[in-house]
Amino acid sequence: MYRKRLSVDGKQTNLQLYEPCSQACDGKSTVKEQISWADGFIVVYDISDRSSFLTAKAIMQLIRELRYGLRSLEPGYSLIFLVGNKQDLCHRREVQREEAQCLAAQCQCQFYELSAAEHHQELALIFSKMVQNASLGSKAKERRRRPSGSRSMAKLINNVFGKRRKSV
Ligand SMILES: Nc1nc2c(ncn2[C@@H]2O[C@H](COP(=O)(O)OP(=O)(O)OP(=O)(O)O)[C@@H](O)[C@H]2O)c(=O)[nH]1
Image 1 (cartoon, rainbow, N blue to C red):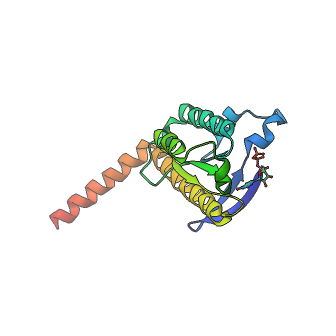
Image 2: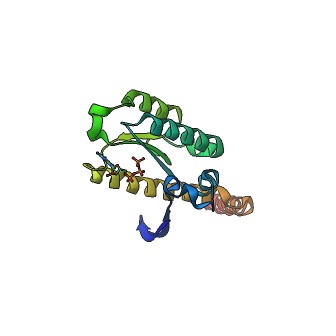
Image 3: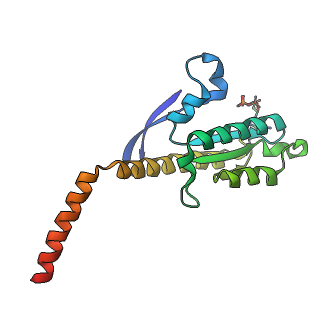
């Protein structure tokens, strides 16, 4: 687990990054548990290895099943990113770009194809986009969690002041 405290849009945020595939044998948590914990997902496969794409597909489907709400976001604002890595090995390609694009569209997530070896800036961009989107997502969640009592109080105050202003 990688932990870092950083500022996102001027707000101090605790970032926790977890890569389940490299730690699948630690026995402490399952991929399912990680899916319910995370605020965002970057699912990576290797374009020169079809089995890695099939694993990515299964993970995407699991995310959809367990976190259905994450997909109903505005266009260009997603908490799930599908990334095809090792684009520099396109002479050994086993996964067509169109097939991955189609999966991304089905899951309403963003799709990128890149080479971590050659395009590390693009990778950094995906990470910062993810952190920004997750931060916006948690703000939206907080707004939804606001107790209805305080909403009706705010409405009442608005009504009272609204009426007074009209009668002046
Ligand atoms: N050619 C190429 N090699 C890469 C790229 N990204 C990672 N690799 C290589 O792929 C190997 C595995 O990289 P890791 O970072 O360990 O990734 P992993 O998730 O364990 O992935 P796999 O072992 O490929 O299943 C290493 O030898 C990396 O150098 C890339 O974009 N292009």
